Length: 604
Ligand code: C2E
Ligand code: CA
Ligand code: CA
Image 1 (spheres, protein in one colour):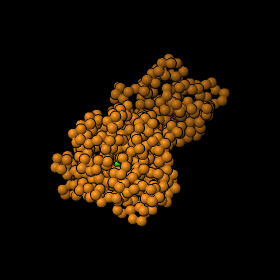
Image 2 (cartoon, helix red, strand yellow; image 1 turned 180 degrees about the vertical axis):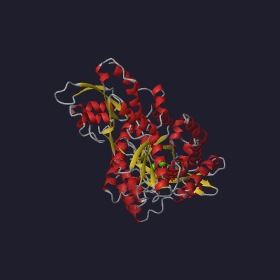
Image 3 (cartoon, rainbow, N blue to C red; image 1 turned 135 degrees about the horizontal axis):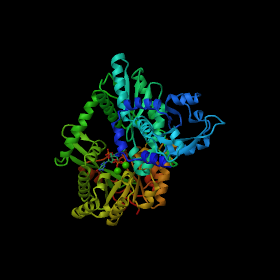
Image 4 (cartoon, rainbow, N blue to C red; image 1 turned 90 degrees about the vertical axis):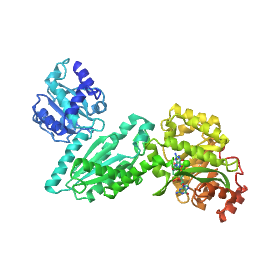
């Protein structure tokens, strides 16, 4: 059994081991050539199969021994009919990293069985038939080890796709053939949109499965002249050569996006990820690998900033976009000091028309660019580690502003996950409410599920501490992420905010109605108040009021306003602008129209 043991240890070796280092030294083109060479010259019969157990690599000995059906793509069972298909589960286990197993092979029905070893290789399997294996106890020869090693040097172990090294070689090759034959090639860089969230919520095992499933979908979308690679993490690439461009790259990008948009089912849970794609052409955009990579990278970035789930082809103006972001990043560092950040306040209305509070929304008045919305600069602030400091400023500013309003009005502040990470959130909040002198229950902190994704004890602890201080906590954008009900069980939220995605077509779409209605029912069942955001029309408001939604927010009830305008808004109440429906709704629900007429927005 030592042979098994040694091979097993070798296959599971840590990256930095001797063999790993050796693997790093091998260039993939050389590896591929040497693998072919070894397969040809070894006295053993060695063959490799992909995850569907189809033949990928073999030497001519396999052909001379078995003759029949030896073509790339032939299945393991076509080659070795003596292997029962009932072994498929066992092979699958080996493929996924399980220990190698012995099998007995017969070349013809009457022949004595021969021993062979099945081992996992690059998300497929390999089979070694060797005279040496007949002597149990002998270790795998250097040569045998080398064959396995060479195969792995060109393939990504997790997905079985070709690896980054192979990618560089292939790209180099296509770019040089472009020079000679003038046939354009395309590079598509693919990035999964929500991979990190899957890893964080469902665990790394699920993340790995997702990558494997994504790799299969990518492979399935390919045609002749297209090859797929895993570059790193959730980054994949496809190289196309000898095709009519840009039409073919665009067609492929569309079908890849379509394939990856369909939910993956992992541990019986549907998981939505989607993908963004950046496209660049050689030689049009670059004649060197590195530049072409950079161009597709920039295009990918453009796809991400254009809302993700889409493909973009590189063009020079994208460089400008990148430069702008870089400029923003630099000036954002100074923005807080220079007093360029400010808050607007959007009314939260309890039907029919009592203003119960405001949500503070951050803006940046850039001296040259003008007003920049939070969706643009907050991700930059988060990436640059500035969000903790900015967030602290927002809480303080919002609390100070609220002290100038009637004391029954609440102020809601959005929290970034970065503020949870800093570890000082509860202290900061306690200090601020103390310094400002505002009643704790007038402050409501809005968090999204991203904060809870890593549902660590810490995060729940932080929320509990805030809760003990008397601060209200609402769960923002409910319905868009995982909407895991365990959050609701583990923490007593004061408010659920239905994401505006479900409010948008509330008047026409039955599904949105069902979802909004269920969220309201769920929240009320748990004693939690519900706010609908993004209410833009009287019809939406009417529907929500009919369904007993506790609180409404949106442009129909009031756009975000500056500090001064907020005062005017409070003074002008009862609310104007409800037009015809206000009376109607007001009468039917029998509530008075007033400002701060009710105690806060929560239903604690
Ligand atoms: P959010 O928390 O979901 O905030 C509501 C967003 O919806 C605001 O966009 C608001 O202007 C917009 N909105 C309100 N009513 C309507 C409507 O009727 N129709 C439509 N289409 N939109 C409406 P805004 O101000 O651009 O903020 C975007 C996001 O930025 C916020 O989404 C929030 O996640 C984040 N954000 C804003 N301020 C802060 C802050 O101080 N800290 C943190 N961490 N995030 C903030
Ligand atoms: Ca919010
Ligand atoms: Ca929201």
